[in-house]
Length: 168
Image 1 (cartoon, helix red, strand yellow):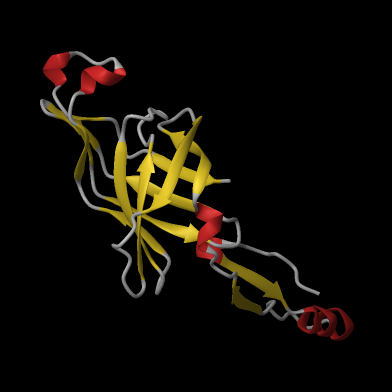
Image 2 (image 1 turned 90 degrees about the vertical axis):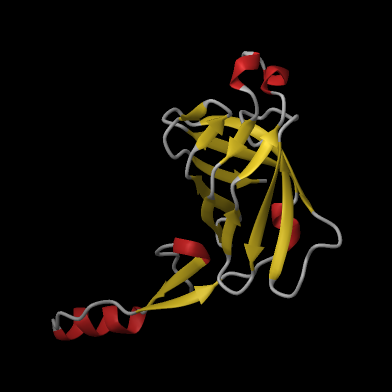
């Protein structure tokens, strides 16, 4: 029987009942043995409308739309577009990559909204930019988890390094 001990970066840990039994019978102090078992990656689990916790300190929940960018996926890289990545605003669009070799989620610095007045900010702020982003696909929890280095507008950067967790 499998026992879920942890799920760091999409790995299910299986505890060894044999070691526990030996320790109990013999009174020997042995550490438990954990064997990593990766959970399967299924792209459809991360596409469509996903619920996202944007953790800027409060953990607001928004809905994002995630799609594959057709014609750009090569080998072990899947290119995605995410609509709504800033406060669930459907006007913002960003591009991310999933590396299937290590299940890393990345995004390069990019402009995601040319006219920030569309989402209620003053015109002098200019455009909205997403900083570099790094995270993982947690295949056991069926989540995309990443941290944005910073958010910027044309006149400067703001906010800390918000964390995002997307799941169906």
